[in-house]
Length: 350
Image (cartoon, rainbow, N blue to C red; front, side, top):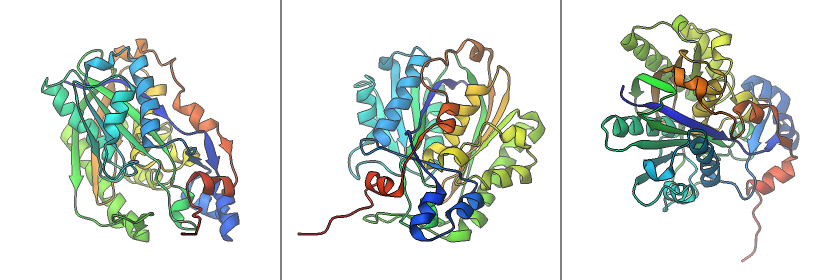
């Protein structure tokens, strides 16, 4: 393809809560739930953090790392299922905050957890067609589950921003394709505060069918096999699903090592696969093949066959925090503070 990744950045809020603490409040086996999901703790946004602030922090890092003038950006797309406004775009605020306005197009993307990968595909098309010089694709969320629900043990917050361009490409895109059906495994109607899900149905035939089919199709189209990839990143609604699907497809733990971030920060939804890709790029060297397969409930998967270039060796990753620091660090809070931060306490009265 004529376009690729020229820079990237990620951001994860600093607060953390453990499944054990959540289970303690609800009289459940939180430790067992955490082990079953392979989630040790999850990130929690502060009261003044949302998808706009997370997106802005991630994008600022990407622009400084790539030495990119914001005025050369032709498109900003923010993929999320937890936009702050029902009617008011997130992307315009982010674009204004980094100084990219007014000569650009901007929009919010929604497709559950694959909104960010869909945004990357759109940027690849616009940049490849030379309609714009740089396009920005962001995947970010601050989703939460209903109190006591299984989702509460994993739903977290975070995001990653990728700048797509034709110049100084650090990660080439060989191919991208998608696999999409109408599979209602996860949803939230207008006015509902928390999402609903179909329990085990979210695994089969939703997640596993779409991810495996999409992975098979892109490897078939690219003429590759699992052993030809140095790294692989799957969408990760928990820490178990990506490990299981990776083994089914023939990938090793070492190939999945850097792409698996959910056990340490929870499921960041639209940011999950993209934060995993950012962590891979933090550790990768030149000329390493990467397979990325995202997933969004509803349902669909986007796959990318990528390869790092020699330019990655000179790429300045010193600005901003590496993803690994977000995985290793954090401030743990009790459930009462978590409930306050996430607006789970509602006051009565007229």
